[in-house]
Length: 136
Image (cartoon, rainbow, N blue to C red):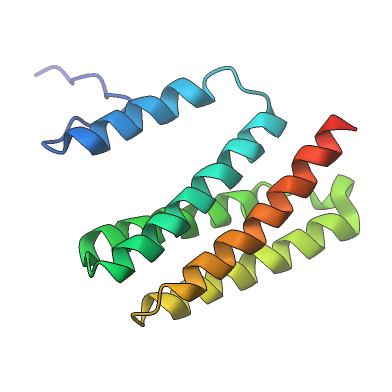
């Protein structure tokens, strides 16, 4: 019996999910670490805004999936901080990402879309500062 080689992503019956997987792979291939952080910020903000919309429309499966995506992205951002080189900035970002995840989890228990938008706005501000720092 031979083992099948693993696939980079799984094809599903959900065409939109398959497209998102393919799109994410395409956008991350060859990106430098700074571009990946920008991409992660954009994706997290989009996931949070989608969670807010799904909350308004009472689309619980979509809300759940978008919340899971946003929290996973924040965890990835936090776990890739370089505390030796980043010092106080890395510690501050770690605290911020942890706090934002907590806010998202707390908001997931309710039916108010506003907390998702507030976290998205906070993250957009951080993303803007990141982009300006890269450009300088």
